[in-house]
Length: 161
Image 1 (cartoon, helix red, strand yellow):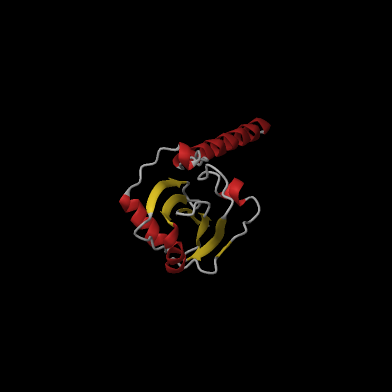
Image 2 (image 1 turned 90 degrees about the vertical axis):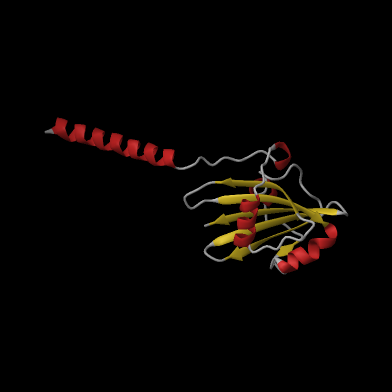
């Protein structure tokens, strides 16, 4: 009788392990990507249009998307986008994208090292940073690098919770 019980326990553990391995193999692996400067990025206009619609931002004519990367899956999806635009267009970008009042010149602790690490090749010294709540338990993290007097770089991270 004990042998049957022990054998049943071992079988249950093995079946549980196989189930976990099977489920994990269906889910895309999540990894930190290298900084944007080191990563070859293919920017697809359809992806950008979807991102713009989903995140509620409005891109000015001077905007150039220089990085687009989707990662995660099953409830932890994330899209990283890097946009360069003329410094003269920054105020309109902030206002039209509903970011007025959402951005400050201070950052949350560890945001550069944790949140923006996959996108940054250096830490900006003059910047705006914040977070915008979107519908359907979605969020948009925003970091705007203002170190250059002519071009600003917006790092946008859309994610769902």
